[in-house]
Every structure is written in structure tokens, then in C-alpha cells.
Amino acid sequence: MADRTLIHIPIIHTEMEMGSLAPGLAQAHRERKGEAKYEQHKLTVEQIWDTLHDRILALPLDFTQAHLYQDSLPVCGKEPEIVRDLAGQGSRNHQLLRSLVGRGATLHGTEDAQFLIQEYEIQKQLLQNPSAPPPAADLLAVREHRDRFIARHIDKTLPTAATGLLFIGLLHEVPCHLPNSIAIDYQFHELFFGKPTA
Image (tube, rainbow, N blue to C red; front, side, top):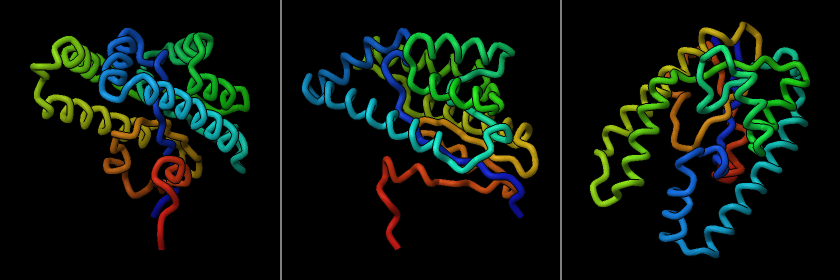
């Protein structure tokens, strides 16, 4: 029986959130799709964040009872500073988190820094040497470790009768690892996958 709710919010990271990987990822995108499609992709990402911003702030929630969980935000004791700095650098995602915290929401560190570093190193290796990429199994294994950690941390920190908002990349599968005591709300999936058919 579910006694808590988690709103699952799929996200696409903007370039500035990719840190030192951003130039390589942008170049790879340009080479695969061409300059015009790359620019269209950037515009689409901005439009998605416009929609997410408006719809999330319009949710019929008491944000003082809401708990925020963010893809790539480590459990480290410096979460507010990280969000503040990234918001100041222009991250739409972190600007939205700041708005929600300003409405009383509770921000949580969400990830194990060790797994974030492992995935970063694999991604860096892939960009530096695309002809000899690391085994896909390595990336999948690290991502599963991340998802399991996120799920355990949400279970541990989301109080009874509260609502959590999980901002998470499209390739993650956190709900698979959550207990039945947490009901998953997928209302934002239609932005990426369309409305479900009957």
C-alpha cells in the first residue's frame, strides 16, 4: 500500500550542465546530425524547460511538504551551494530547483559521488577514443548502481504522506528499484513520449 508519492520528471541536460564533457558531446552531436539539427535540438531543450517550469510551478502541491531529488546532485552536505552555483551559471534545471526551494520545498542530495565519477570517466573515455569505446556493459552497470542508490535514498528520506519530485535523465530506471510504498506519478512523461493510449 503506497503512503508516499514520487512525481517522476524526465529531463534533458543542457550543455552547461555537462561540464567539461560539453564541448565533446556538442561536437559529436554536430558530426552525427549536422549543425542545423544540433541548433534545433538546443532550441527544443529550452522549450522543454519552459514547459516544465510552468507546469511544475502550477502543480496543486503544498511545496512546503515537497521533497526534491536531482539527477547528478551528490549527497555531500553542500547541495544548496551546488544548486545555487549552477543556477547562477544559467542551468534551467537548477534555477527551477531554487524556485521550488524558495516556495518551501526540501532539497536532498540524491546520488553517490563515487558512481557519478565512474560514469564521468567512462563518458570521457568514450569521447576521447570513440573508435575503441568502453564496453556498454560498464556504462549500464554504473547506471544501475546509480539508480539503485537513488531509489534507496528516496525511500530513506521521503516521509510518509509527502510528495517527492525526481528530476532524472531519460535513460535512468529508478522506479524499478523503488518499494511499493511509493506511488509513481508519470504525468510529465507525455512531454517526451506523448499521451498514453487506452
